[in-house]
Image (cartoon, rainbow, N blue to C red):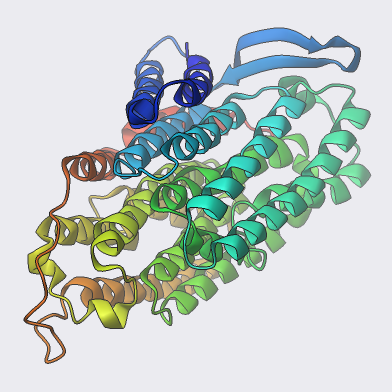
Length: 483
């Protein structure tokens, strides 16, 4: 059943091109909502084997090379399919007023979503790589055509970094196939690769995927790409695309090469901690609101990589929970900055925003940004807290000293978040405010629906994280690399 998330989304992309432009947004929304509903239906089924990557579709594809159209699902992939549906649906709602080349816009957007579903469900290594690379092309066109703020530079930088990572991934895929004799991820995960091979194959494959996860120091494409992208593009980059790299690093690199992972995991932890603190410090110095959120995404993805490096069930489960949490929170932050604020003020400069009384002009936007900021800072009651505390407890077991450094990073996260919140919505009473500002267009119903969907998700998981952890932990505990 969950395989239909892929088919419905790609079918929606093709139908968008066939029907008149006036139907494009409705077709895209229908496809996104259908994918979300299929993911929800599968999420709440009780007969799913959450602890094993269970085959749902297996059809011969290129028999001479042993390639199959092979899809599978477990608790990890199920969780990420769900956040993909949430981010896609809200991104389309926040793009409801797109009129310029709307058919192309929604076509590229749905290709990103469909390719992401494919990555999360692929059980054939080459098929996963194909879907992974498929996402790169529509990302480029979304930014280069529909973006702003050095959009050509941002699109090209993102694409070049992605292709660099993809080249490393391709090398790792070939090595795994030649040494293991199969593309089947379940078979490869049981194969014992020589430790000498794992020692160099793991860093090649892991780094290739981690580029897309925003690992320091190969993270600079992320803030630039986020700022250049249209709102929906930023939402998908933060909500889905960065998770592709982290998920594939976990599913492929760490699980196929466990010995290599343990040789290199200390370095992964160091890079993750640097990324958390460095990106938070840089965010504190930014004046463009989207740059602040872009560096925030890099910092929060550092928590994901740190959780993976712990090599214990609690830390890795927290990392997957953080993938879901940041997917929702990051998308919500970019929605407020890119559509609710920028579309009405035509600026993201914090100095300029501090002179506009947005808190009274756009009360729903102010409320949404407060909720998103609280979730991003890890305030209890939101998914960010549940994910980060789980990662930190897992980190304490593996790297106690790192917890103290990350704690300093969390202070910086709170500092830049509160600074952005204050400058955007709560500085208007100062002497710099403009009392004669014209009235602004109110927040639309689609925007409220998109924001409400994401706020509900972060609150629901924050108040009851067991609903996700009960699905994530069995799949994590089945991984080979755990100690």
